[in-house]
Image 1 (cartoon, rainbow, N blue to C red):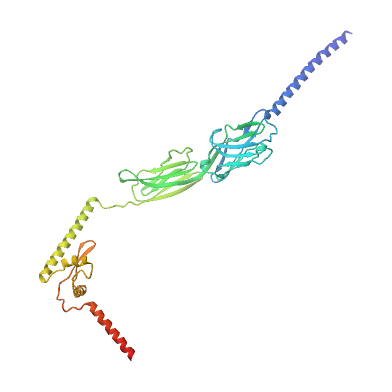
Image 2: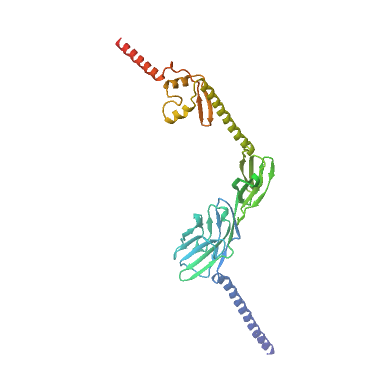
Length: 373
């Protein structure tokens, strides 16, 4: 009897303990399941890679997926991508989907180079960027907005960094005047990684004087300067990085003009030569005047009248003057010449106009005689 009582007491003790353990297990199991399954419906989340790298001129894909606390949402939604900073950065892409539609109609695509690859209805906002340029490098942030019966929105805070690589490209090379009549050369290139610049030229070894250009926020541009070009010739700028190299050249040819002293001497010499020519002309006119006259004064008078020859009133004198072998040319001005000729007896000369009329009459008579024959 006593043994039966002890056995019953043990069973009573064991049953409550087993019930307690089973309850604890069930409670713990329910809590764990609730945490696992209800976590996506309790908060927003977005998944993006830390960085995406692509070459300039090609395309890049910026992945972005999200979860939200609203199960089976099929109301209107908007997908947005920003650049620079979250919430306040400029939008580069935006599209909107109507209620129940999986088609997100593009409302904004900067320069037409941004296109949505993912499906916002399936929690995918992945974006494709076409024709990459160095200026596209930076951070991008995805955002989704619900605007139906439920008004809610979420945006990534850290975003994804887009890294753009590019071979070197020289965008400017020039020669500029410097102090004390010297010249300096400038070469500006861009690339990622930033290129190293090297100058080469006459009496100049390879000199690398690259420096980052002022005001370049992303640091893709570098500038190299040659402060003094000592010799004329060809100067070449070479830009190189791990992706390639580029070259550009500029030519310097300085004009070495005459000095101020030599210029003054040249002018004085020209004036002296003109004075000597004028004195010679006056002397010749004086000697001719002793022999019978000089046409000095007649030049201006006849030329000013605007008719005939500038030598004499008599047309026979014109004929003699132009056919005389002893004509003297005495320049008194760079654009004018003074014509002098020895005066001769003009009575025996024949006017060329009269000769032309006589020849014409003879030709006419000869033609008439031939026709009569």
